[in-house]
Length: 365
Image 1 (cartoon, rainbow, N blue to C red):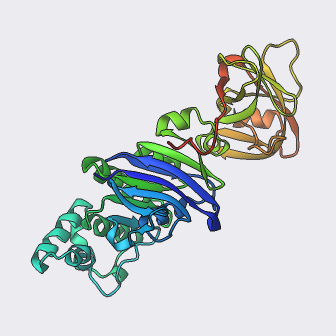
Image 2 (spheres, helix red, strand yellow):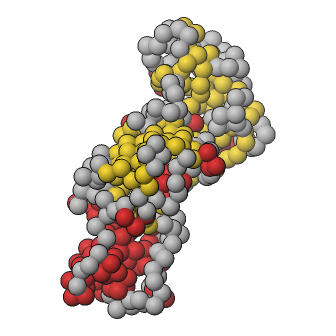
Image 3 (cartoon, rainbow, N blue to C red):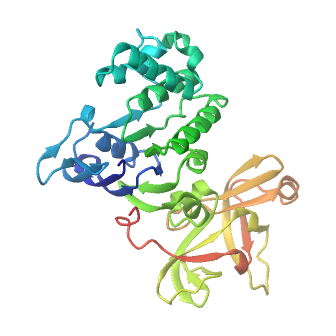
């Protein structure tokens, strides 16, 4: 068994988590900086002790404040991989990977064989005799992955493992992790800022904001219909909160009505979702139109190939500014620039209405 169950609080860091992961699942943890993502991993690994709560790994209780249980990090069966490989500098790659098997009592020859097997598994067998100083960043991370897996952990904890790699090494390590985790049915948790990591590696995703899980579920479901501002932002989807004021209509806290598709009861807290590509941009508000018309002050323009993304200033409630994608030619014709007020127009058929998150504390279950 290698499932994970966390119901734990740490007041000093302002976190209160409720997270569950089944055997063989890979969970991606997303969220802004400083919200507690790495704290979650450190509590699971045994590097931080919760103030209240209970943590289970593989059906074994490793922390329980009610009974005073606290299993030390080395006895938990969790292996952690961070941004830096942190290999022992005086050891070769093979010796680094053999370290954990030797600590578990394997003979020298058996540990060497285990190291060779895992180095080959991560396509690093040819690096066996090199010292860390002779390895590139990508090579060192491959060896670090092999070292973590050689410990035969119940759960693999990955804290931004691609963050320090260059643009060529990161995709290769991402493919490696996907193959290793899926082929071996490994249970793993990966903290990341990169949407590609979640899409390529994980089965499930949770979004953490202000020390709590605010949203969770299968990766594609969460990212195709996000319910939190952060998830919508990384997924590239516009999200506007409000309250259902009538059939297929929500009203924002600043008095704007937005029509869309969704059968929700009046008075229910809801969100409107629509993609930037569905937005038309006008210099003047169109009249006699059933479409949604939203006044937006341009904050920035970003060029992506032949497309220009127009990002508005933050919404009146502090939510992320709305975005629209237009062609470079259209942006030039409209003379768009930061500070100018324009009108985002989107058809109701392009807007999805969903219930807002009911509570931050149960979203990760």
